Image (cartoon, rainbow, N blue to C red):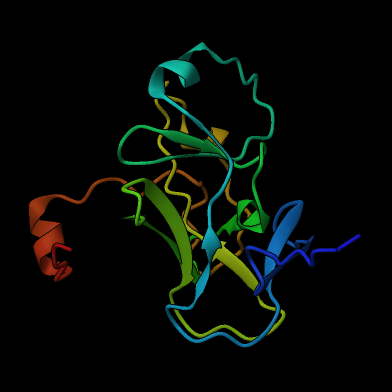
Length: 168
């Protein structure tokens, strides 16, 4: 009988207890800026399928893509589902198309991180039901914490110009 060694889809990420929330994702080695951490994996749902589900404030690992597909990291996901929120993230989520033309979500570092550092993204949540920011409290503890995991309010065109924001 032949044994196949399983390789991790996220070799530079380990899951462990987080000081911010529940479990977190941590770098297993020093990583440079723009290092690939892994794809966000899990069951995919259409917008219509998501609308029929009842989540009842349970812990979810849902990530909605720009094409309105939602990936549920709780079903077939990997360690990337444990990246916690920070208002000053050291990682980002980037959408791109794979070789087969499927929209995928990859995580990469924004800055160099040291082995053992917790990896964070800015969730920039939207409250479709008009819930107040207090319903989505942030516990990241960063000096510039917004106090919520909701996306920052939209800037006016004059604020965006003064911040020297460049379109992607």
